Image (cartoon, rainbow, N blue to C red; front, side, top):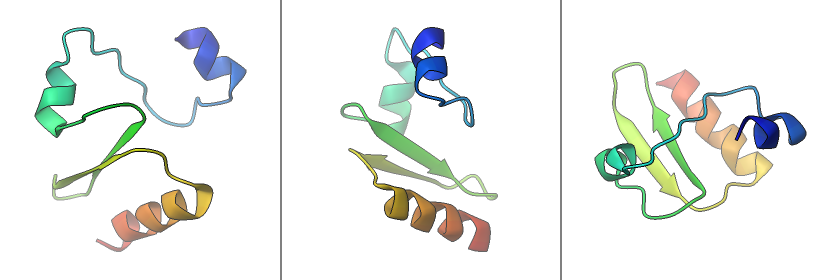
Length: 66
């Protein structure tokens, strides 16, 4: 995984290994890719599937505004 992260310059955010799918279950992740957005109050919104650059930017702006 470390090579993949380095090869694709994905060092900007946390990557987790979840071999027993505990986190997947907790956040209701059904498949990869998936994004869990957690605001300052701890509220979680999971997006299952891909996000384009503009969609990811919208999610980030939504988090910053909350």
